[in-house]
Image (cartoon, rainbow, N blue to C red):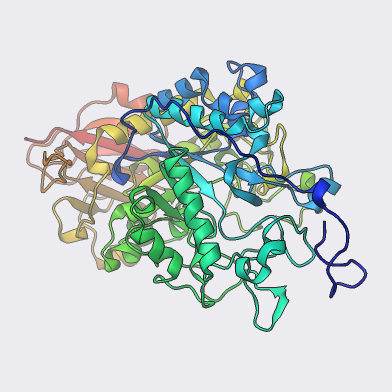
Length: 593
């Protein structure tokens, strides 16, 4: 499959590869869409659920076996019932473009399960098609459309994770499947004067040349196709800075970003950047994308993981991330919803593994545990991996609830990794890209139903209360809508913010003072809330601060003991509320409207 002569790389190969490369198919694009009024959620109202088509459906007990692992499986009523019951608004699918596995994985008996190895930008991956599996080549197109149609009719958006930064042709020693043979220097970034040497800002051997008109046309044609023909509602762009490096360095006025902004079709859907790529001085471009874009917030992830391990990340850092990361986005005229908040995603530990392992355990990947990051910011709570110790199990459950509560209450757009709500584990593998098996498939029989129910309640709570979905930044300590207090009930001052040992804070949210407005101009009024946050390893008494006169506070959420709010009495200013170790308590007081 090499484009060059293996014995003399300076010469083209004389071998005929026609029988070994993927072919294109012409299909009837007509489809009887029934989605009518497609769901379109404002970013502030969005809850994203990141999921793999195969992993979610492969072992689902109520999805027919012949549909497991397919688009048809994800469009099945059992899958949709679960998603709508959980309460998420938007399904973000790991790559569904046609892809092929790397040769080295095939040699190990593995495959590229995640699919970040695209070769066909205008074709759904045939490996996820029940129709193709049943002997109907090309059937993946209508099957994908039917899946999207079913999800839309259930009120769910569909966002696609797209890999426009590199292709499956890898480096110079990779296979010549398509682009390399058509026009190597048009499609790939190469060293000046040396077209055989690739510039690689992706870690995958090549980088698509986003400064070439031909490549830009391919990118834009692909995006429009998935919107117009497949009814996708948006995209998450893998290693997005690589798309804005037409001159080498990242530029927010690069041709690709400019074309997206001007395109009447693409500019109207959800656009989310993974704001980092590989190996460049400016590879970490968090906060630097144009206003049209939203970004995965890596600083949010790192701060919240550290905070709930009780490490000294700083109470100010916690507050900044909780309130939408104004340091990253407010200065450029963006909104809190520019921040896509995340604790875990496909790349790294699941939430259950984050609280169960100190170290990665990637031996199944065949690289002697060398692959995957060793910087996980995780804590096993006292034992590495599975344990029968009830104390450790309870601590892990509390840690999971605290992080999920933080995620769902923070300003911005919450992203939930599929399966985190049910305690899905990958057995400590933090780089399971090549594991198409029980390591990555959902274990529906072993689901943590208590955690799932708790998460469902959190999502419903967020969607019911606009005060946690603010569409603009609040001015901090001088704004009545948002105030910060010490556990003693006094307003936070400079010394409190600077205290390196501070690990607890009370957040007051006024639901009726200067509220946001709905699209029709209706004020989004809400009740008042106090969020009591304690990341100490011991319980802590909070004195309720004086806020609205005569406010009576009723417990709504307790991540330490989810059953506690049902029996709690109403409290007033000055009363003490005990908050368990490493936990969050949310109190609610009716506000005059």
